[in-house]
Image (tube, rainbow, N blue to C red; front, side, top):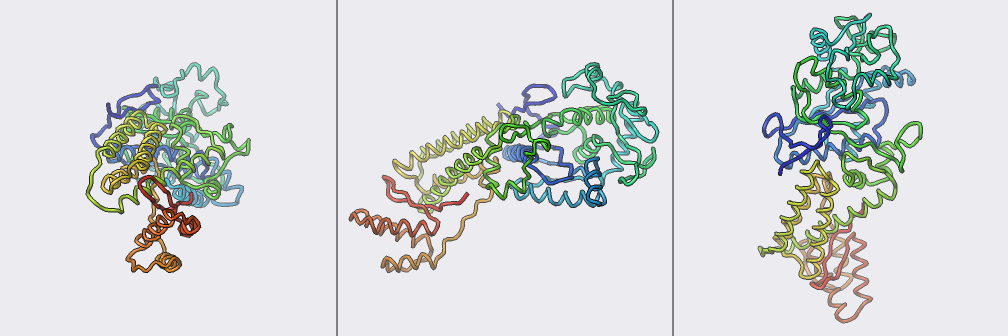
Length: 488
């Protein structure tokens, strides 16, 4: 069974079949850059980073587009409060937001189109909509006629009649129907404006994403994503605009992330519980934040608490511990095989892929990784692991964790040679060493000898000196092993 994806459009899981074999074209709604990026943004972009990485793992060439809304009512209001030009204001926050997401460990999109740089594309699309009978001009504004689009509501599963009955939208003298939405807004004083066939003005929010996604990905393209809060009206309107303009399907699969909760409550300005990415990475390890989000399925609402982040940090420590212990065994050299370890690796890959093929089920993928770690720990306690299977297990663990955005910043920090030489001199070990690792092995041999002679003072002293170098020492049935103790 191949990859199956839950499609909001159909309301069920479907086999994933891309428009073009071997390629995936993916568009994710980006930020409206009127303030710093927050953990709600991180929730969505980490989820789609994982989705993109898994598609690449499966061999697809992925083109990932994430727009930047730099022309918007909120931006204009915020810029006005600061006494800044709106486009200058949005440029400032674009840099901050993208920098913060990068600091959090989210991979960059292939293309970041800005709304302000694609006005001509939007005007061209609006003209098509009008020509096809779905849009109308009203006193310098242009509106989409919802009544003309028979499939309106198919994404959010709403009927136009019901929407009209419960409409909270104030009717406007310019609109024929209170549900009609703006494609183009006529210019107002002190707002950014561009020339158009309908007079000076600026685009409506929804047209931006329709125009930019189609410009870079064509139509139809494979995956359109965003937060669950964008299903209606934003994504519903995107579909209406695109299909009205081009007369064919827009995006094949619609994916939506569950909205973040902060300590059990919806994240909102009114509750004062919005946590910026900038604040979060000062307080918490960025990788622990990524692990926290990966531990909840992308369609479910994660609940951010200090306890959850601490659990994520401890879980990461387990992954790093086995990764570094495997590095210890790999360093020993040799070509010996171990069918048991090879079998565990194949089982891990199978369980991981089955989980991720089931609508990117990251919690189940993590369970597979921790089952693998438990099995390896049992194996190490009983017999240790030869170098070659250790290398295979370590490389596989790294590759699968990378898909989940984990272990992507692994650095093999060098152990200070002078400090190791100093310890050899302290314990009277006369040995010329070519590497710090060789010296540590000699210190471990001396410690093992001290333990056999029940010289616990010396054994404990060596252990503590190695800990000061950032190393952990563990005694097993197969002898003493050491590895780097990472700070998370």
